[in-house]
Image (tube, rainbow, N blue to C red; front, top):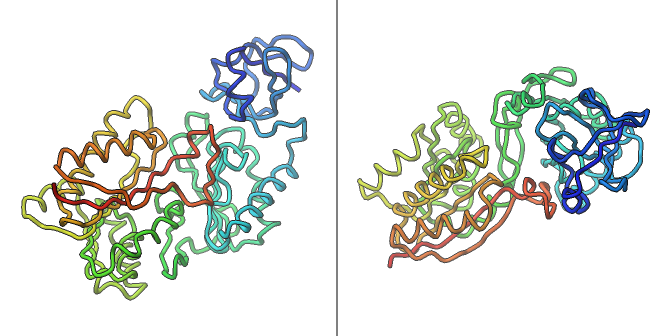
Length: 399
């Protein structure tokens, strides 16, 4: 087995369970003959990771073309083979069953399920896979075989049309990993039904991480006039109508998303209450403030706004602006429902941004609830990328 030795300063983070080893954290790589390797190791090779003092750290896959040179799969000296992946996927499924996520769930959440760079979403009897690192992509046949064995699914599809794969030396691609099937399916959530476009929808086709948070609006939307921005396919808005809202308007810049949102409203018999329009949220909220429109509840579920630490300030400015505009449209004593889906904007910074927006609009805010993502997206303390979603409801009152 090829051995990767870490620099001394890296010990605490890796010893505490973090699975990522960056290229600049490696002191040396030693071949099977005990000699230091001068040339890169073949991408995807399974290697043993050791601390500077030769203590064993774990076993994982290497890709020196990537900024993350090694991703640790196991802290044991165990074989990484087809059975290993079967066991990990089965254990993840057993965990979801224990916590009550069986029909639709994130079955594998990468590092949080000890399978770095692997995402598997379960929609009824259909599965969508993302393998976003070279090392995990090599095990795709074993992963598919495990899913077939454990679930006997109706279909498996890969959504590897993500730019991050190119940083790993992989091509973007999508397609069937099983016999072809109709990729437009219907799922159930909280007593409602939603169309899911596995092939062309965002990410894996549907945002499962907010499924619990969508229930959190139940009481505040009763009898309310509700506005939703960045609605995507209308899940929050349709929940609001289902929970007794008087009127619901959802806006999204994507014509395709709006068409599916209206389709979802009709599917649930709520299209008389819930309407969707294709609009730029920043422009629309600014215009409606000028027109003195007001709502009982404003819901904001914007995209990440940033994919890198270099643009965090720009992302924060975007979050502040959209929340500020949202607050200006809320009736005295109404509610703001707002989210951030990037771990690069941490909880403290997100809450400070909302507080700053409230001060600038001369509003008082009172926290109703604050949540993370649904529990089928488990959080591992010390792994920032597993703790990414912030969901906040506040009461907004005039000063």
